[in-house]
Image (cartoon, rainbow, N blue to C red; front, top):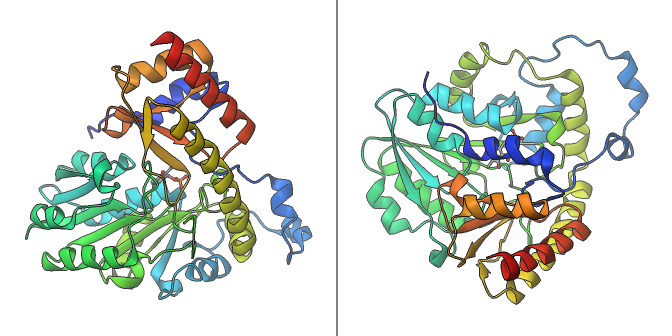
Length: 370
Ligand SMILES: Cc1ncc(COP(=O)(O)O)c(C=O)c1O
């Protein structure tokens, strides 16, 4: 099966191990095993007696109960556990998309959301978010693009790379648009729980739409990407259909991953408070730099871990990022890897000293090398 190169992942493979200052990362300062073991309410001695069998096939009851607590309207039958959100997205697409289907994918987004449907032979239409609309979908235009034969709308809320959040009301309007063509909405909610102000969790698509499918994971909101644990939440009929595909590619997730994820979710308030505090600090550093650097601009992110910074420097983003990293060791992700040249994705959830220094180095580079 032919599939396009995954540009972001390729960029990481090529440049991450060479970076002195990594501003491309999308996680919030990952938790160590020690930090996880310090979380209260658990006798960790139990680990040593655990038999390393396959465990509960679709996820343990404890884990599924935890996942349900992140939604307002889901029970264990509405959840299946996957190999990260990346595994979740692929399983959903395998289960609902067929050759010839029309898929509308709202971009910029994680490339899975258009390249996988395209590889299945679907007709994929990219619907571009715009900086001047604060990176939020223009609903009138979306309504024109979603037609009677649209099978799936793929979206990502909160959005990577822009950090934009679709409000609860706007999400309900998108559901109305999908309902007209009876389309599924696959909403990648991997950054849900990281709204910077107010309630950290916005509405989930699975809680408000019968054909809404939510994918998420431990990687971003819980700072535990190394567990490689994600999930899908949707109505039982959809989950049954997905589990039918899942038998062929998952069996179960690791029993220790399931266990640690359960504990982390039970401590969600502590972990999320920690992460939002860090994101505030990082965002402040980034936005101060943006406001003082005349060649760049940025719609302030409202959630998540990344900002999409526009620039006016007369150079393609791929060349800019490559030269910057070669000369200075500062790694930034070029917007072109997410289908929008003239932008840079900057992650601000890690190592604030490095973030500050790297942005200073970037300014020196702009002034002296371009
Ligand atoms: C929007 C989005 N979806 C999915 C993923 C994959 O996440 P996971 O680590 O859970 O597989 C990422 C990772 O960066 C992402 O940004």
